[in-house]
Amino acid sequence: MKPPRFAYCAPQTLPELLEILSEAGDEAVVLAGGQSLLPMLNLRLAAPSHVIDLDRVPGLDRIDGANGCVEVGAMVTHRRMETDPVVAASAPLARCAAGFVGYRAIRNRGTVGGSVAHADPAAEWPIVLLALDGAVDLASVRGWRSVAAEDFFESVYTTAKRPDEVVTSLSFGSRFAHSWGFSEFQRRVGDFATVAVAVACVMESGEVAEARVAIAGVADRPVRCPEAEAALVAGSRSAASDAAAAARDSIEPISDIHGSSSFRKRLIYAETQRAALQALRANGAGADDG
Amino acid sequence: MAELSVSVNGELTAAQVDPRTLLSDYLRDHLGLTGTHVGCEHGYCGACTVLVDGASVRSCLTLAVQADGRSVDTVESLASNGELHPIQQAFKECHGLQCGFCTPGLLMSVLELAATNPGCGRDEIREHLSGNVCRCTGYHHIVDAVEAALNSVREQGDGS
Ligand SMILES: Cc1cc2nc3c(=O)[nH]c(=O)nc-3n(C[C@H](O)[C@H](O)[C@H](O)COP(=O)(O)OP(=O)(O)OC[C@H]3O[C@@H](n4cnc5c(N)ncnc54)[C@H](O)[C@@H]3O)c2cc1C
Ligand code: FES
Ligand code: FES
Image (cartoon, rainbow over all chains, first blue to last red; front, top):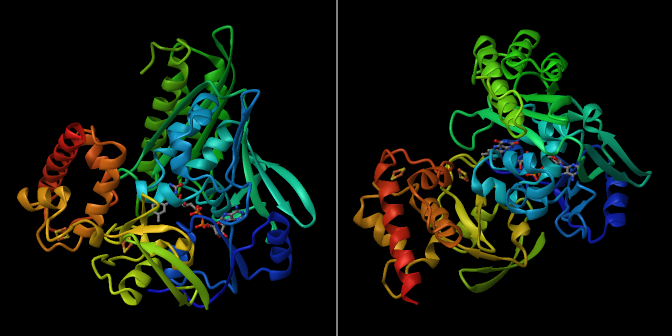
């Protein structure tokens, strides 16, 4: 099908964009890469009054690295995340996860800001943000604010972003950046994950001091699994398997056409174990496992 | 209506379009370039793949106005003076197509692969083409064709 009628504008500056957003009301949407919005328009699942194109707003496609942290503009594409040297050096988990997002043509256009604003519960970026203790930076005519990833994702396609706000950037912290693992099950390369797991650890003298285990595809939003995180910190010789079992036993996953709840439980175990082993091996800890 | 000026296969085109016009429909209906095929219109089949500024995109998930000021290449840009492009030639020789519905999108995806990773092997070829669905060939001949195409692209590169 074809998109329904809408009014289109392409503001040239951020203040102009924010002004338009504050006046346009709830029926307006912003357009980033269009890789989620256009399918919804074509299928007529969305019928916005206004489509406000972010493409001409300067400054939304920067990648800045300082003190090991990375700030990524909302309009940075998945493909750039896959190939950018600053991302590879300071947030290697993000570089790895980028390669799992859709097919090449989707990655060439889809953006990180669009992915977190869209908040598909099976998407990769939200769990990367959760695992790296990241934040989403928002702007509106009322000012700026930064929302921790933990508080941003509320439910299916629903976030803490208010209708007059735009995502300007994502910030990835540095503490969790260097001991990480990522694993996902997809039916076909590039399809949405059935289950995806991101693991990141803070290491202190060869031991896991803090851990993050973030899982996509199991609930109405991306979730962290404190039980699995505790198992990694406990640091037994079979820490990765302990974490995998803890994740499997503490999460009651959804069932849908892509997988039943019990199938997803097996995937949670397998993907958590793989991601955890990868994170621990990066430091030579817990390598007996698996 | 919105003003649009976009270079298509090296020629500047200008038009007034309804902003909801998809790039695929602009190419097919406004410019008569029906080589770009439309299958699913929600990003899955890859038949509508074209290059925008050299990068593959789904023309069904791109508004024509989003291509304003950019340069678009479609399957019609491949053959010149009645001579098939080496990638087309390889698809022909290796039986990389049957009905041909998926072929324009595949060719444009392969053109991007040849430009960005011509040295890749069969696994990477399969991965790169995972977003291009073909209901006829079973894919083996397509991968053969792409391998042959990348070989001839590499040879041309070495020769120059
Ligand atoms: C075939 C296919 C396969 C895919 N596979 C995957 C996959 O495996 N994993 C995955 O994670 N995603 C996948 N996607 C989705 C893709 O990653 C999208 O790019 C992403 O979800 C949305 O980003 P976008 O830039 O395209 O946003 P758009 O489609 O332009 O926008 C999506 C929504 O977010 C809002 N929005 C966009 N940017 C902002 C902003 N800066 N501030 C506020 N609101 C904003 C829009 O108003 C809209 O509601 C797939 C898509 C397709 C079509
Ligand atoms: S028609 Fe565009 S991907 Fe199927
Ligand atoms: S040749 Fe018929 S769909 Fe590919």
